[in-house]
Amino acid sequence: MNREFVIKAANSMKEKAAENERNGFAKNAANFYDIAARRFSDAAACDPANSLQWKAEAQTCEAAAKRMRAAAATAPRPDQTKPRGGAASETRQKGEEAAKAESKAESAAEAESEKPTLDEAMTKLNSLVGLGKVKKQVGDWVNQVKVFKKREERNLPVPAMSYHMVFTGNPGTGKTTVARIIADIYSALGIISKGQLVEVSRGDLVGEYIGHTAKKTGDVLDSAMGGVLFVDEAYSLVKEGNDFGQEAIDTILLAMENHRDDLVVIVAGYPDLMKGFIDSNPGLKSRFTHYIEFEDYDGDELYRIFMSLCDGDKYVLEPETEEKLKEYFKRYYETRDRNFGNARDVRNHFNEAVSAQCSRIAEIDDPTYEEMTLLRAEDMPFLGADE
Image 1: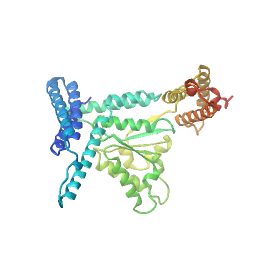
Image 2: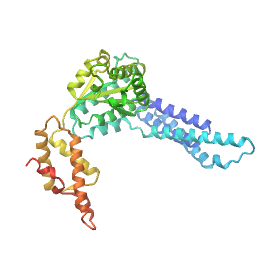
Image 3: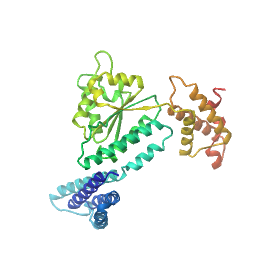
Image 4: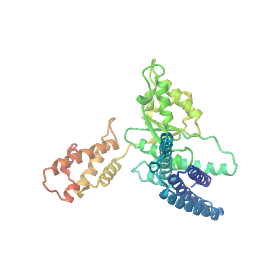
């Protein structure tokens, strides 16, 4: 964990807790004090020289959280007060506004507490099937960011960095999934403040008349501030003739410049088309310097993805069916064409098998647990497609 970031986050949560306490939002204050206590405990772990100080801070925040919960339990509800005369409406309105503010602050506290740590995000990345080169590239990039932050802590010069990325690869190769994890990683590293991923395509950005594109793209950018904007099939923004796609590109480039400290943009699509897209605009070429290539899944990886879908939904296969499935995906990969859909095709095959199994089980009056969870070869008509 980054020491400076952890300490900054801990103090920020403590300040938010104190602010909520001053405003009378005891429940919110308790939530923020809890988060601050955890952050100070993290600080003690990553800053051994001052561990006693951070442990003391953690204990103070834990005590404050207990005190706030006790206060929240005994505080009267807004609807329990009965003001008289003309002040009743005004007091009720203030009570409603206070309740809304408390709910909003509580949601913010919960969102902050649910953010994955860097270790959790990296574990999620490394648990994905395949993507060996992607995992190594992201891991190397994270290490570089961590080292540069350490240089900053020691007042050493740091080369200019761009956190924007280009993902190239065929459909179904995990680009969107990895983009979500990158958002978590950047949030954990303190590069972005929130960590949400906003996924869009041409239709979400480009309007139909003059002025419409700037508003649509602007609204998307507003929702992406503090997080990552993921533009799939970004090359579709570049078209010949009088097209508003260029306006969307220009608006995004301006936001990348003006909000470089709290907005990351990832563009994705087919390798050849993405190269043409980046080369089409000097502004794009200068800002997107990190490329990650997503290769097609091979037959063994396709089989493992299918089995992970089974595990997730509690389906099992007979050993003979597993062997047939391995052979099928091996042939499927070796004979792939331009329409090869990678994991998307696997998902479609899985859905097809589940649908067939449901039709088969529906004929049984009282199916057993084993019958409900077993996928047979007969539920997978695609297995005989190449034979």
